[in-house]
Image (cartoon, rainbow, N blue to C red; front, side):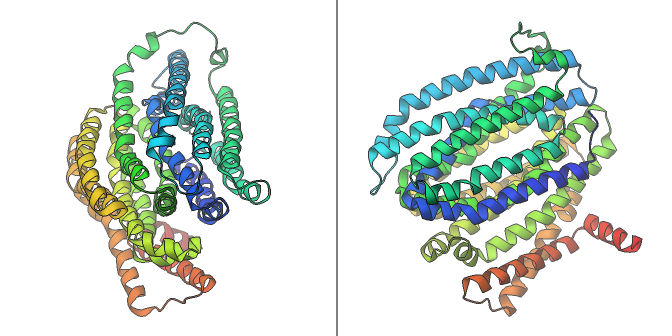
Length: 502
């Protein structure tokens, strides 16, 4: 299979992710309005539970994606790749069955002792939780197959596919809730149907790309091809599990503390903060297999160049979005949801989480380096320490300050990661790169975007009407993106080259 350029891969991912982000921005508040914020709190809990269920992936997805990238780059044989594919898929099916059974067993206790609601009946909560189980299972299996497609760098097809699935998952559900039923039963039943379609087509596409002999699934599984990758697989498995715990513990704790109505508010605020992750994930998805390929071919100069350019491109986008949301969180929530109570109560939470996500995006590049090298020991140690710090801090902060306390913990830990951990990893794997990377590729766009935001706050009076405010915010966001772009040497060179050709 011929590789597309990295630019085409990133562009394809962006088209898909921007569509997904736009659908979420415009339609999630509509779902909350139709269902009610208490019922939408169940959707928020579903998102957290889905992330914890992905715990059962145990690193299988990145392991398969890396193996496929190695096969595509000529560093692994077709037979070896097929054997590993069969082993990982078989393990995944087994884990899904175990996970589904365990969730089924504990559903009654979760509905009784964990979630708090004044307006929803116990039976509605319990039955909604039961409906989540097949969604969890189907989406975990889908992630495995999509990771293999990432390894093949099949990003153009994936972009089209993810866009279509997003339209059905987020857009079609709104008229269904409005016309048929706005109950949680309808929401989760519909998601089961979409998740099944997603898995079916992902399996079909991968079946087209894998070597022909892999299409016969029910054959004897050999472990010989997998033995050399067991150490990497175990490292990624444990790392992935610990990272799920590190990124979802706050949301799990708050689902216990907060009533479902308030948790629905919190869910929408987190969805807005995660917009930065949606907009930067396409770059990482395109970079990881290409960095793996470059490391396998021992192209160190190209590896460093791609790493820095990818970091800089990511920071240009991340800086504009993070600074924009952090400075104008109240206005953004009001325009987005139309709910002034939500905007007032969650604006600080949104600011803290989006700043934390900004540090997270910058810090995540060291993970891509370790993944490309196939050495995850350091990342595993880091995640364990991160989790050991996070859990006691979260219990203390959320008990005293609720959702705001959780936001401060998230911000503090991710800022500390960028300040202390990333330079150590760079010294180990990319000596001599850290300070130029930090100053030129990461911090410069944030400094320029902050200058732009301070200018807007000092000299611009935003209108009060919702539509007028939306137009003003769009203009402000575009201005911050211009400031951020100007700070990037790579972006300036690209723009200058384009202008000179004209």
